[in-house]
Image (cartoon, rainbow, N blue to C red):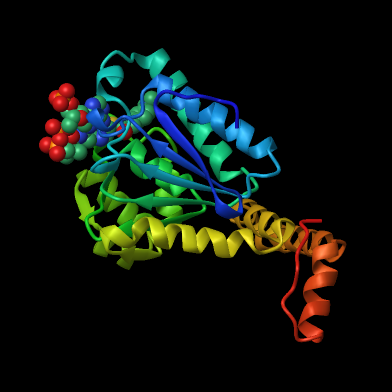
Length: 262
Ligand code: DAK
């Protein structure tokens, strides 16, 4: 990865994990245009770079991300607000459709755009001290980076309305009960657990993972009939891979499969 962003810290971990750390701790990693542009560039490269197998997202300091930069939000009018919202939506959608699994390890505040960023990741885990919310209503706006839509898809319409209308903040334990995160661990275990989960995924056949993410993402908004068609098409694609041959053969020969990614 040749980029040298200023507001993100990048590191390559074992087994092809790209660790992207939001690194604007003095503003609780608030998303300004510069940080968003850097994230967009990094995601573009990560998509094209075959050695990147998965993405780990974290925030430096006490917050994962406290949302869109309110100083910047203050300057938006109707026209620029629309543009800003679309820009953020496109970047988060790029993460969601990267074709490689991503995991947000949430160590503290995930508010507004921070919660929206986490929801665009494939998976989310939190430390016991994490806190989640969509407080935009208190600023006179609504979530503008996909929050209204992803939240209701993840935790249901009623709870999404509760969070968005009240602007209240919920604990990691509540987020777990509501299905917003899949695990809560002690703060000192968060990174280790995040890597453990991603290492498990990077050892699996990438084409099957990609098909799975595509079918679940796209199928959600289709009729059952069309979604099943999509599933069948991707099942067929997987059956044409070397990794499917290897996976099935290894099972029958009672050995560990060695996937090659083809
Ligand atoms: N933006 C800019 N700076 C922020 C920030 C943010 N979102 N959050 C915190 N900071 C800055 C603070 O101003 C402070 O800076 P200094 O005063 O030291 O210079 C520093 O980070 C530390 O924050 P605090 O001193 O406030 O720290 P505390 O521990 O006391 O409080 C807090 C932490 C997270 C409870 C508090 O900082 C807070 O309430 N922050 C704001 C959280 C929030 O409201 N987030 C939602 C942002 S709005 C749209 C597109 C997108 C969006 C909406 C519409 N369209 C285009 C329509 C999305 C909107 C959002 O995400």
